[in-house]
Image 1 (cartoon, rainbow, N blue to C red):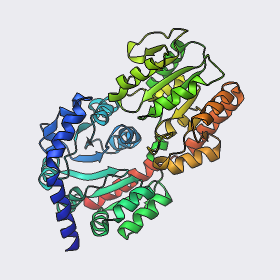
Image 2: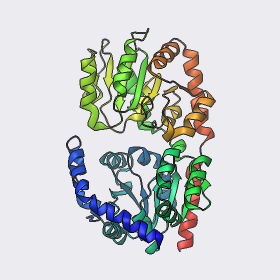
Image 3: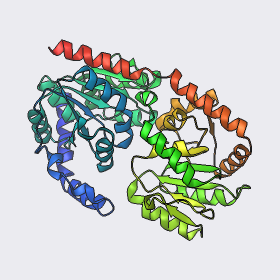
Image 4: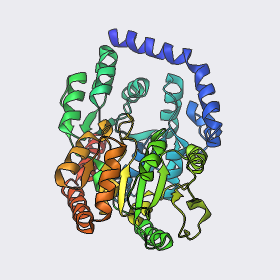
Length: 423
């Protein structure tokens, strides 16, 4: 009864926020017009329909969509008679899905967590099994899946101490919601312990799907092409930067001893491309855009990576990579992709989204964690004149990734067992 009351209050709050939902879509569309596409899907109305049994994976945005690649390919090979359905929350996630998988999968937006919208989604696609990746806990969705006898798994789950504290404020809602999932498998033992404490059930540890990702051959070829276009200069990549970080990075780069460095900045969110371009211009630096697809002039100082889905190519083309979202308290971004390409990594102090991966990478010698922009300049200057250190860190990164693989097989086995039980 307490869960019903908690979920009722949760749903009531969602209804109160309904006007904000439309405002949010409109506001985001000012910089990213795609937010106004497929709005009906966000309320459970779909025009596409599967003609085969559906295996459904929810991959919120770009990171989750890319992390799911090996699992998607494994499931397509294992269940050719099924339709793989990917649901997303952001237009960038949907675009990444289209770029990665094309017509191999079906893709739609997951509806907002209103009971009527969730039920429409489930009635329309009738998934044989559903998978939520990372930290996607939607209480009405979980409840309706259980009521409809649709197995729902939370895989590759991660839960920081900060997020766990927030969920703990609503113990009855969180406990019953997590308990209604058929199965939970976490990335790390720490994630598993926090989730177990919230739901009062055993949570297994599966590792991180991101370690299993394979750099696409096409992206490696593109990376080689980009490197040729950059010329013979050392290349420093600032990957997945967030608001405020570009200003800090550009200030730090002006203090580098090596003035021949070509800096490539790839903002995390495409709606910020123009903002970052204007900032680079204000610093008086000569800039070229990746979208112009031109060879880089010898006097160009900064390349703006204003393209989508090419991060592996940027990693392949650089000498040293800094992972954004970590200089300021955004929790960090995925450093595993850079290590997988064999590139040394610099990362800031704020890494709670990838805490264990960062700790392991630093311990293995694949990454250096810096505290501020001054340390970034010092370490970058040091590495740029020490090719042996760059090579050693790159090799350590490759080993670090290979030693932590296996999550895809673990997840595939869990899904296979779930589908067999349902049959």
